[in-house]
Image 1 (cartoon, rainbow, N blue to C red):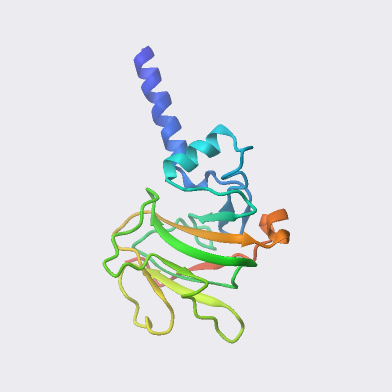
Image 2: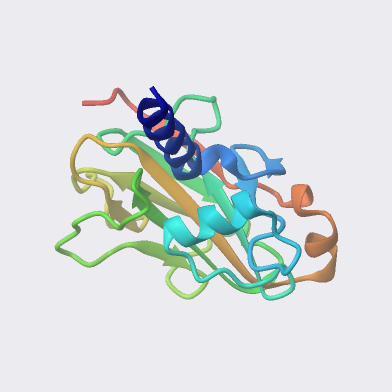
Length: 186
């Protein structure tokens, strides 16, 4: 009985640590780990960082926003197509990367894993947009495409490097990029 209890305890702790929605404060569908990379991080945050393979820096250097759901609240799936649109965060540099639910990159033969402040094309209103989908969309020439092959959970990570002081002080003040599903999930 003791052995079964230990196994169940370890399995439940592992499941909790692998959840991307364990991050704290948020803006729209994005959650931010306020203590990632901090000496004040609690054991659960430190364990999540270690398991996720992140090289977490403190909040003054980098803020990590994670989305596991779209803006309507539906879980993100790699087989679905999404349009992600927003204004560049107030920071020196930023990127949005698509990960599978195990926090590893998708097998993308094109080696396209993220959109960032250098690769994003801003429209006349100063907004960026990209598409995440298992196959290249028909309008691939108009917005960047991040391939997400297969049928798995999908996680977007928005990294904000050297965020401005106002964003550091109030992480929920981020104008969150919208994540909208496009069409049905094939």
